Image (tube, rainbow over all chains, first blue to last red; front, side, top):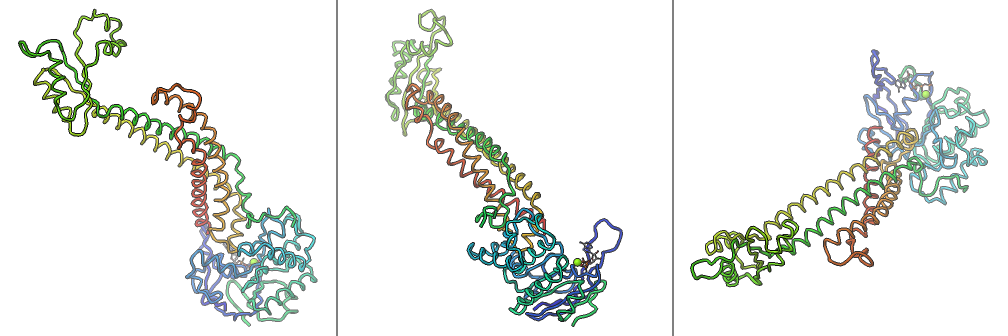
Length: 225
Length: 305
Ligand SMILES: Nc1ncnc2c1ncn2[C@@H]1O[C@H](COP(=O)(O)OP(=O)(O)OP(=O)(O)O)[C@@H](O)[C@H]1O
Ligand SMILES: [Mg+2]
């Protein structure tokens, strides 16, 4: 279960005369285990900020966040790292390792979890084939198109079967066909029990895959359900 | 899989991040200096032990105007002292140094006059005696002897040994300080190289961190690499130091033994500890590299998030 209670987030803006920028204000919601949510709202509404809190990149200025039945305020460094391993993230800007091949990028979560190399090979090859990158295993990110990079990022996010999958605009660089394949992959994971939150501007996608929506406006939750 | 993939050991693709080729050479230079420091300390210790074993238990007694009688019709001063020494418990093997032996000792200072009897001053008699456990100490003996033949001086090896021991201690302390400083400099060299690697890979480390890498996952990658580079340097420095140490060993061997240098003395000249120096330096620098990298990376990661 994911639970936000009265969560506020102010980015500290060092050196600026402006008061702290309020990114999120009194955000309050719960998502049951295995749930699926769309996260929508205009640009700058706070979608990425909300996801950052969930993938433990930042801590809230106020309120309490529970992730996968863990009170995140009580985590030490090691606990934070171990919880992160159960959360798959597709970043808005991909965040692939530039010096590693597509294969090695996708293999990272498995290697961090110290899986056997034979198993890594089987899983990574299969998943990359599934997202249509069978012929791109040895390519570095700079040798891939935007859409291909996005698919590598998606593969890396789901390879370790996370309990929670967070995707920030995962279809931004994909054509409709690829976007549908991706949604199919995400929904399969969701059916297997992974809780999923997908931030998107793509209203068509939301319409084709009906699910409860979290909608943000200026850092406030204006719709939940 | 194709060979472009990260190697099995380089699970998170950070190994290549510290490609500092200069590091082994800097560590090698440090190891070389450390080996010299260590050799100095060992040599000082060996020489001191040797000299001490000769000096300990030996007393030298000087009797001025030895050929005068202690009283009218009495024995000569030197004979009276000799008799007294022979009767003192704990003192053995008291003997007068011959005139020629004395002349040989004094020749560097007095020239030919020391031996041809043309010296304008009367030389004191020198008596050498071995002392064991129950012998009186030099001061007490001196008082006793002076009461028989005024002006007699007792010089025990003890005072000299004390000064030698103090010298050895300070030499050892200096060598320890040199070793410590060299170790710290080596650690700093490693830390600088690791820091360069960290900032070069900052983005990658942030991403890996986000994927749930533990501090130890990241620190171990750097530490392993730093350990290998530093150990290579340690081995190199230790090996280069060997011939230099052997040469120093031969030089100092002539003080310790009377055997002429050459042949097997090359092996004999080096204490076993120095023969092991390449191994010791490899292990020590490996440890320094590992620790310095661990501390540097973990500190850096704490500041990162
Ligand atoms: N690191 C930061 N420091 C200061 N302000 C920030 C920072 N990151 C985001 N903000 C501000 O917080 C607000 C919310 O940003 P956020 O990135 O969460 O929006 P978003 O909904 O993801 O937008 P988009 O749809 O364009 O991705 C914005 O006003 C943004 O300028
Ligand atoms: Mg965003």
